[in-house]
Amino acid sequence: MSAKDMSVIGAMVLNDGLYNGNRIISEEYLKDMLSPHLKLGERFGFMNYGYLWYKPYDDKEVYAAIGDSGNIIYINKEKKVSVGVTGTFKPRIFDRVDFIEQKVLPAIDG
Image (cartoon, rainbow, N blue to C red; front, top):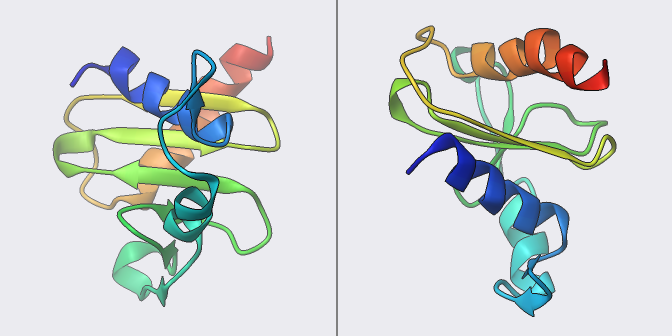
């Protein structure tokens, strides 16, 4: 999957399960998918975890599907942005969220 494909999935999540005006994921499942079901420990940055989606912050609408080798789909609902990244990265998964928020988002904001 390319970074562009990942950002399209993120955009679909941002649009409440719609892609090009077509319903792909039900709003009910999407809400359940992003809802925290487990609080992770220090190794995972104390993030919340849903159905393959992490919620790095308790008080922000930020979600991330984080995979092996640095792959991440990052969604920030407050900023209405989706970012897809592929590649080799640091060993701790929350570092990818930090990278996007510290390096990518400022470049998008201008």
